[in-house]
Amino acid sequence: MLDFASFVFYVLAALTILSAGLVISARNPVHSVLFLILAFFNAAGLFVLLGAEYIAMTLVIVYVGAVAVLFLFVVMMLNINFVELRQGFLRYLPAGLGVAVLLFAELFLVLKASIGLAGAKAEVAHAIPSPADVTNTVAIGNILYTDFFLPFQLSGLILLVAMIGAIVLTLRHRPDSRRQKIFRQVNRMKEDTLVIVKSNPGEGA
Image 1: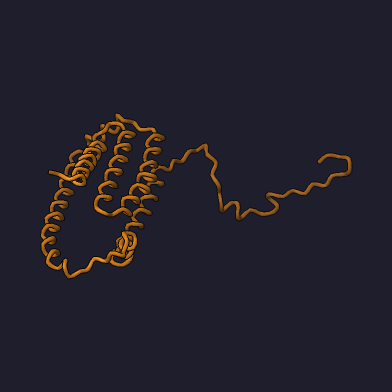
Image 2 (image 1 turned 90 degrees about the vertical axis):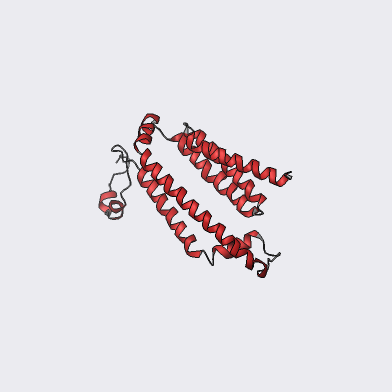
């Protein structure tokens, strides 16, 4: 018979898988973002059950409170042509299936390797003490800024490049918009902007 923790784990895991499937199968982009938020909440619950409260709160604050809400506002403000999206989906379906097969093959290899390493780690686990006075935040900070410092910095660089790419892709040049010309403003002369007019008392300029 399952205990309460195992029951909650299976419920959250099932909801996470279901909401993740609805993210990619929903026709409305707004509904996809809402299902994505639901998946984040369920994943945060799974992290709480695993004892990683810091990761759970980070997932809720960062992804649900910022990223998912930003996705929702962007999707609602964009003028999306659903007919064109469906045509593009059929065009890139073979390439998408190839990428999906490759991704699942990589996940299978990683899972197989992790199962093989589980037995080797179990033999030496008794020799490594588990410090009770180290919190999740301290442990994650020590690992993140020591062993995984380079991948952490590379991920930040990738996010920066992605942000610049999104700005470049969505930037639209309109001929009727007035833009600031920094070079022209800096190099202008006093005679071009200042005019001295002498007027007699009682007369207008």
